[in-house]
Length: 84
Image (cartoon, rainbow, N blue to C red; front, side):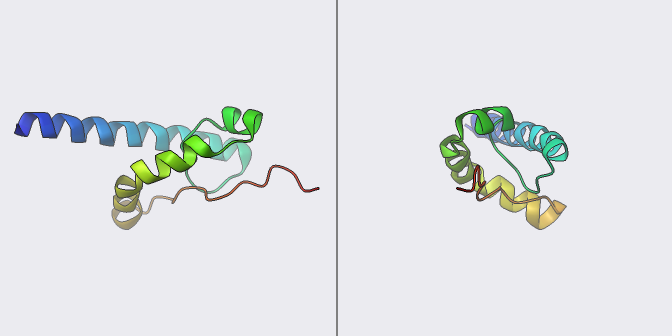
């Protein structure tokens, strides 16, 4: 039982770190501050943040730990795609 819980927590933390690292690399390219849990190419192509918002909920505990203890950025809350 303990091994199963540990494996799930390690997979969760590993996925969070993977998404965070990709987001930080893309944020430099696009001049954004914060974590974008989906690929910036997909977001700008579809102009849809639905998957990002879902992942914000799923990874909220990991992001809280990252921000509180390691000084990480919070998730991006909004992107204005166009001003009309």
